[in-house]
Length: 572
Image 1 (cartoon, rainbow, N blue to C red):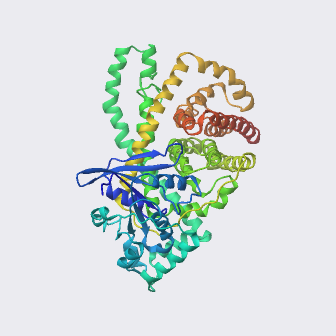
Image 2: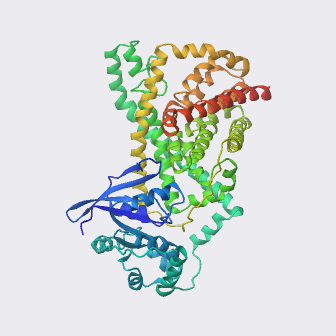
């Protein structure tokens, strides 16, 4: 049998991605299935002399779809190819339902009985030969974590069979599954391990919420530690020692003050190039996404990948699901929010895991208004914190209150309902370093391909507006709002304009203005609430479309206007 395409099919959290990582090399592609926002991963493996495509199909419990992800999985299974049905050996009964559905299709199937090592830890004995006889297709025990059984799985791919079982009802399938499990599986008593005790503690609200807060705090500490050290010891020195001399030579060639110099290099700050404030295409345009954003994204995705593979994120999603439903979302929306605290660009891209457009709109709108990025958080804490911790609490307390109030309102105003969370709760497992690093590389390369061109395009657009004095015109038009309603000096308009490029730099620009504590709190809060930076805005348009982006922008403007007025009045 000539194999041209292999589909990895199975329930969520059965180790498909880990087996995919074992089968394929480093070069993989993450794509959206045509006509949807559902992602799948594809790569290639060497099978004899052939180069075979391997597709990691979205996890599904059934071939009778109940959501978009399952619909995509079903459509992919209908395509020509060999299906490796990956089964969680510790949950044999539940997983066999999908297996029987696959055996009713006109496709060759082979079964990978994954997480084989866990069966020994859990006191589960499975007679593999009997199971193979019952199903009529090859069954190979595997452990993606150690690589056990992967070679045998590859060697036996040629034995994959088309069973073409007669279509049966669900009740008939479950009856058959019960007989199979009774014949091939035996259970023995054993004591709980330390990880299993931790599993129980982290899912119960009384103990789970404190554990969640501790994990999130530690994760942010690690993210900030890694990100700041990458910036300080690697990226900033690279730009300063290697890129800056080249730009100085280019600057001399272009002549300072020329249109091309302004677009490519930007403005000189105190007679020299400042990567954070010059706002040229080759200065700030490259420095922001590569030297300022990429380190935090690297550290965020590293920790996120570890928590994913460890099995913690589904528990966090379940813990806060009830709260998130009041905001029109379900628990898994916490993942884009967490990413958004590092940088809104990957946060918005992560909303692709939300299937309904309504959910996506709510999540993105809440994120861009109420979730400041890591760099902006650091600037607010540093600047406002000098006036006292209670003022920092006012800024972030206001942002949290806005997020909750906006969510409640949007949930009521927008038609539709937030779906229930149907998520598998996997056991805790020690992550496979190779899989974590591979996932990290895929996400980083995806960010650079998607975000970097958009940031450069945004910086170019804003620079042209500056050169044509259009931004100066807007600054003059909106100064009455700034001074009359928000109580800020006219000079603060420059910070609001710069905020469209860099929010953290914009907050920093409030420092030299000798603002009162009230003005500083008002200014910092408004900068966090109004338009996101240009990189985020471009990604926003890509993900929501122009129509929904305009709706979200209108909400931003109204919220910024109202909260600025209220804070100005209350703090007086």
